Amino acid sequence: MKLKSIFLVISVLMLEQQIYAATEVQPSLSQNKEMKPMQNSLSQQQQAIIPIAAYAANGDLVKLSQSLKDGLDQGLTIAEIKEVLVQTYAYAGFPRSLNALATFMQVLEQRKENGIHDVEGKMNNALPKDYQALLQGTQNQTQLVGQPVKGALFEFAPAIDEYLKAHLFGDIFSRDVLNWQDREIATLSMLSALEGVDSQLQSHLNIAKNQGVTSHHFEDIQKILSKKVGLQVGQRFQKVLTSFPNQ
Image (cartoon, rainbow, N blue to C red; front, top):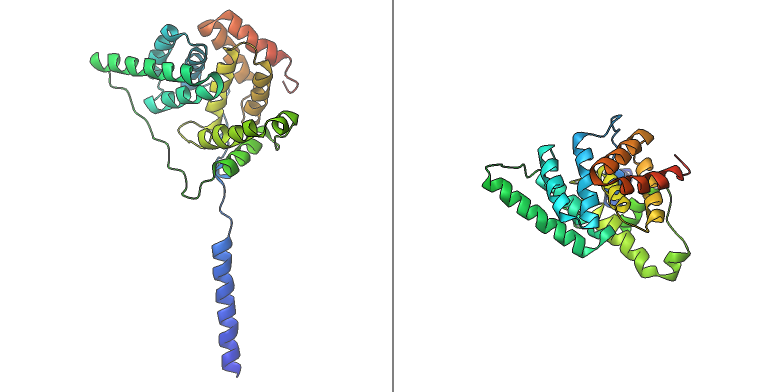
């Protein structure tokens, strides 16, 4: 009887270990994203993202073309630039994103004809088989903002809340070609190039700050927008930045 009792205890312990292993919660994609400390100044690649994102958003394809060439020369990879241009559609619409991508294709073809071979760069890692866009997007959004996002607007139109969470913060922000800091630098640049989106610009200033973008980096963004995109764009960014409560 004692021997049977010992075997029974061992069997129960083994079963408990199996159940624990099967039910152990895996870390989410957002939890796996460690916020990397930024340098005091924006890197050359981050500086190059600013005019690319701004011109992609406002549709100035001639100036975008030159900014794309500059970005490649400053060390941005093809994959990184494509990621910025794809993300553009979430803030400026599909037409601007598609036109920007077509312009980039032309730039790459011209450079190839001129004997310039640009670096493709790393591809996006495949999402887990059990990936759920809405669940992951909600986690990403909460981590980016610093708290769950709710409000009367999302209660009024639940569909837009779902699209924001599932697609923008889920499908797009779960892609790892760009880190979240770089995505927010791109977003700030896009919104600065558009009129009538001060509220969204202020929201993304807060998100950027949560991701380690500092007041010095904001100053760099403002200067680059003013110099390379336009004084009015830089002033728009500065105006919202001045009213930013956490600045």
